[in-house]
Image (tube, rainbow, N blue to C red; front, top):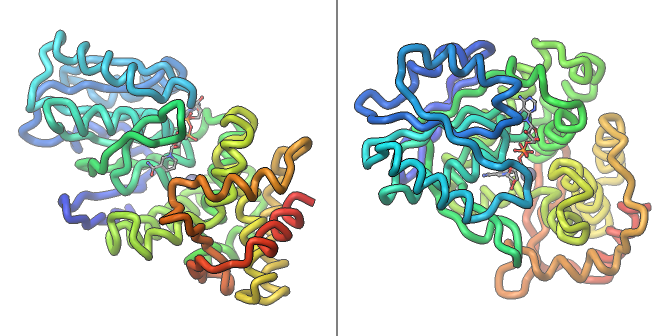
Length: 357
Ligand SMILES: NC(=O)c1ccc[n+]([C@@H]2O[C@H](COP(=O)([O-])OP(=O)(O)OC[C@H]3O[C@@H](n4cnc5c(N)ncnc54)[C@H](O)[C@@H]3O)[C@@H](O)[C@H]2O)c1
Ligand SMILES: [Zn+2]
């Protein structure tokens, strides 16, 4: 049972990757915790609620639903659930179980961060993206009309329970979107994962348990290492933004409705790879290998009607932009990236054009 330990200034906690661990959720609740509030969406509950219900067995708990969907990832539903928790007898000893994809992860995590100035949250992610990315690291929050995740807090969970078996009901498009984040993990830090994804494409796409468990465990280990070394957005954690600078611009340009996050990141990785080659950081051969692997897990939904100049202009508005300087995470070789901020804007525009071509 891969059991990784996340070490942060706020405390340390386990991230456990194990097929079937959902059935033992109750064992991971804080020992002296009070009332348990399970936060999910009706969609996730329809697929997996009965399993979690069984797992909680004798543990008294209340079930609360969030609306689901990026357009509902806002403050208001969080406030409503907080009111609900108080009415149901929630207090400073209450515990939140976040059971769902990245949206539930972020919103229920934020609810736990601010309810009575902070109560524990147990993260039980149910999408591939949430399992390998969103549930680890303690970032929580909601969107504003002016942008994504602009209100939030760091609130580390008491544990993260990653059960690859819950993915069996995940739609194919969501599964693919998660795979692109796993590809990212391979490119930025794990050459062996990159090779495995290249050699075991069929098994991964058929969702064979052994392959799925391995790629999840590798990605989780990497995220745990990076987050532990650098909890906030410092230099090391920045490498996780590979493909995200362009990806976020693309998501914003399409009003977050056309691409899943992982799909936008896949386009973003293409742009970063082209830029890495053009700016002289990475060899043409290795760049081609990376582009080929992204293509092998495609097709990514097409980009018709999207203009490279508009995307380039949007980069400046990225949340990660520091004092007007856009930071790019660029490949050096498979398994290594570097963060640079002095790339010639004309080269950036050219790289975006190539990525979209
Ligand atoms: N906190 C972080 O560090 C971090 C990192 C990456 C992404 N995020 C956030 O994560 C969100 C995206 O998360 P997501 O991609 O998981 O989307 P999501 O939470 O919307 O889930 C995607 C869809 O899958 C459904 N679903 C979830 N689990 C299922 C299952 N087991 N079976 C069947 N259907 C299932 C959901 O109902 C939803 O329709 C974004 O809001 C993003 O900002 C946060
Ligand atoms: Zn991401």
